Image 1: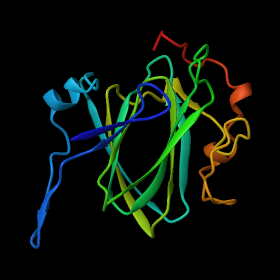
Image 2 (image 1 turned 90 degrees about the vertical axis):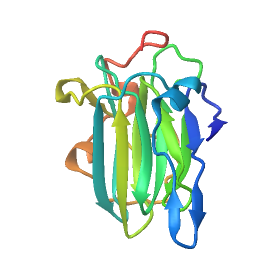
Image 3 (image 1 turned 60 degrees about the vertical axis):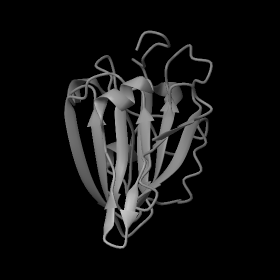
Length: 184
């Protein structure tokens, strides 16, 4: 597999080695020893799959203090996937990394603990797979406004389909209880 470092240390794009021919393809979605060698070594304890329609935007979400690291990929369709550094005191606080994940490139995206995460569906539908290193904890969930101008994510859409919670999320400057840099 190939690891692509991003401008934010710790956030990585993973390109698995794909074996394919006229019959189809095969690749390892996850193998603990190979990922651990590349710095993704927390044990994964929860897997999730979501299906969303075109124009659905989910995010920006994180948990604190029970933070989650997420290894995400698209099983079917296309999404714009985004990680935002929201660790107070971080030199990259408020910066983001965006990557297209789709069922052709089979890329994965590693979002470490302390980062908000969101994605926009670019295809008719998308099946999105998450491997999480901490269980979902509604009591620890934090939501940040998807179109916060201080973050400046170029989503390429003005009116996405949002949940009520995401549509009413506070701006980053108004969020309390964010994780601390070096303490995630």
